[in-house]
Image 1 (cartoon, rainbow, N blue to C red):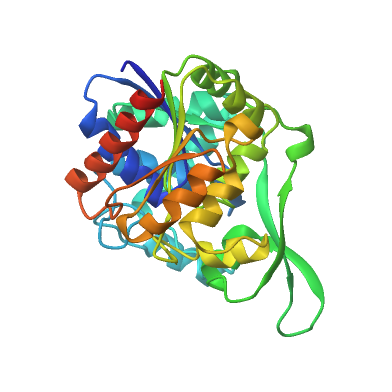
Image 2 (image 1 turned 180 degrees about the vertical axis):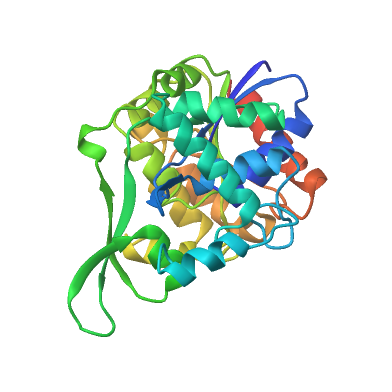
Length: 324
């Protein structure tokens, strides 16, 4: 197994890729990352999912919080708040700000986001090729009813996620700039040449859903020559991380491993998946997913440590081999 391409969001995706790299040392792993969470803040380009993956694979991630740099301080963010700049509820650590300053400088020097990400990742020796899904600015926004005024308004996804903790119901998700965006040639090539394509256990709506919304990606996944295997981000009716249930509710999908698998759909029927891993607690859903054309197996899916994540990756690769 020489080439594996993973579609991934932030923390869950990062931990899965770390396990995959542990399971397949020496393999050529490409990670196509969600960029819908990206934003300009205080004049800096912030890319939360790219950074979560980079920090995790570079052993610099704060494992207790699950995001950001370990050993952080927040003096600069406190100063920005004192000046009334930025979002006081969206705290960026001082070390993390170094990354955003470097990224913004490289982008302003004319590098693409793909080129910039490669420059940043080289410092950390992350062992995979980290690829933004697009070099264009496509940001995820959320349409809500303002709880204070009752008016319908649109806010950036990070405001809905971090400030409101997804407590304000989302009416719909919008990808600003998606109509004029294109997937990068690097991302498309990674899908074309992959022996296996994996969907990490990332948010199906705002991570995987945003990646596949970029023009060219869904078509490339469907045309992939290798098997496409997904890992459920839902265990026993609960989101593994974050507030994916609030996202699924907004698009009318139940918070179950079976519903998410059927939402992605079978590739043989015009969907995206050949195979799907669900947790052992969801083994009862295997039959209905198989009936829907998705080869499904039940295995332990809790990523409690690197070894557990590697075991999940091993199960996904083994399922792909059986489907080859």
